[in-house]
Length: 214
View 1 (cartoon, rainbow, N blue to C red):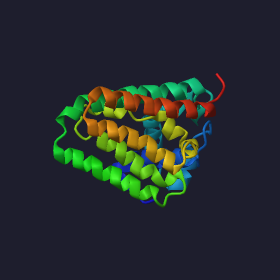
View 2: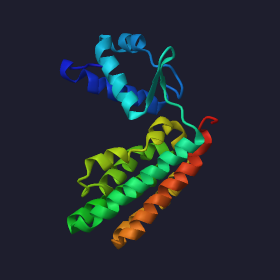
View 3: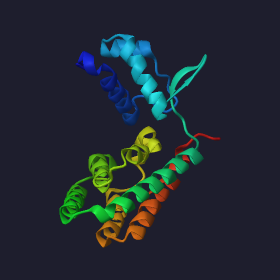
View 4: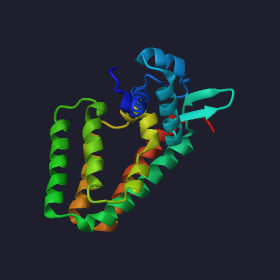
């Protein structure tokens, strides 16, 4: 990869995240500065900085004498992380939905139409990962609480992405997101909040099976 000196840390952080998401760095796998340095052809300093960022984000664990590893989660931790994400996203969208203009609503409808278009030819859930991120990002388009948006990112989905893509068929995925969309179209903030909480809880229940034993 071709890195610029000014953004080494950010680019290395994104690169390692992508390795985790793709499963190249598996859950529990050691993360070694020397190996990454050789792979990327850069010094260890920006890699060390990037790993500290990922430790703070919770994607990497760091223990004395044991080094750094891709984080493992118990089933309960996975479920809890989805519940928290649902609470945060539900609250953020419910609070900001009254601020949506008709233009905002049309932007959201456009994303839903894009999703439906992709469903028509998608055979696997990973083909919908990009539209999934866009769908949830669009829900936050009127929310100015950046900290809430950052916290709502589902850690376990990132770590266990290779399992997430097996959870639903593309059609099931679409039906679940249409349920959220219908709640948004209603502009009923309580309905929206409940729909999002239920959406995340269901996924969390399914994903929990991939956690390590407590």
